[in-house]
Length: 448
Image (cartoon, rainbow, N blue to C red; front, side, top):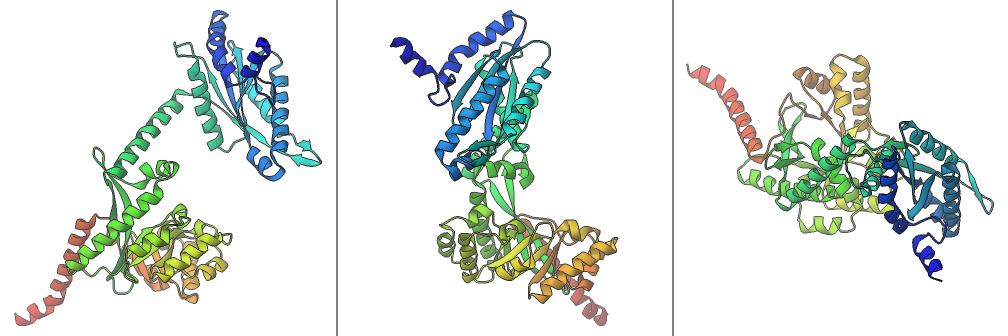
């Protein structure tokens, strides 16, 4: 009875494989024995891909059958020369010993991946799933054996992020990247607490009169040590932390305060455009929070990337977008021409503006083909009653070309870089002063 109880405690009831507790008990000894024989302990962390889909469509009994099948495949591939365990859910471990030829592990991983690709039949249903594999090898540098599991998990994460159904070996570079990512993640969370994320503003100009017609608010991180950082430093990690919506909200609230400040200073900046993430558009509290801000109609625009408004949009996002427009907030489509938007999508959403991506705008002064593409987008906008904004306007030649094509609004380095609130205030005042001097010049000359 005691032996039976111990067996139950150390084995998975579904597959009969050793469980996580058993693995933890044998891992140190396994690595020590491998070193004594002149070899290395190696650990393969295996995770089933698309397993949840089987559970959701055919039920948990089908999922259990797939887990039993996976355990059978792993036992057959290891062939008694390694330790196979199920450590939870759809995750398995293979622990084995290698000597000089580390490529044995790659061959083993390949065999497992190929076998797991084969369809499995369950009650007349053809089930397919794959596996991702992370591999770590004990390098003999007095690292505790339990770190093998941590390292293999890091390699597994890399295999999944690179498309799944593949294997990756753990490397020191991966470890450094993980440490760096964690450091940045901690700093981002601290930066949110200290209000370090601020808007910088890039002015937008009427293509005909070159008057300022608005600004785009761009998120920047005012890092206490590294200074002003652009989104390419923090955006990916912020998305993993699920805090992009918080950054969006902070930028919007700060932009509204700055808009009030510019108005009080008698600066005519009619509108500010702010970026809105897809996740924020799915927020059930979004409309309520926007109503509380009492945004004046026409003073704020939400910029959405093209992928948000595909034809397959869910009903809740569509409802949120309609509510946003009813609140007097304009909808703009950012990076138009780089995604998969259709004319049907534009008709359905009816945005106030669309912005042509800089990748299309920059070549227009030298490429007739690109110029024709941009001209076609402008014509589409005009036919649908949508204003067209061009970003990436880097020279006055760009500006003249876009004006001749009928573009409405220009944005780019030819007219101004992104500035903080005070910098923008100084920029607008200096432009106004130059304009006044030009207007006054004929009068002054007449007096002479």
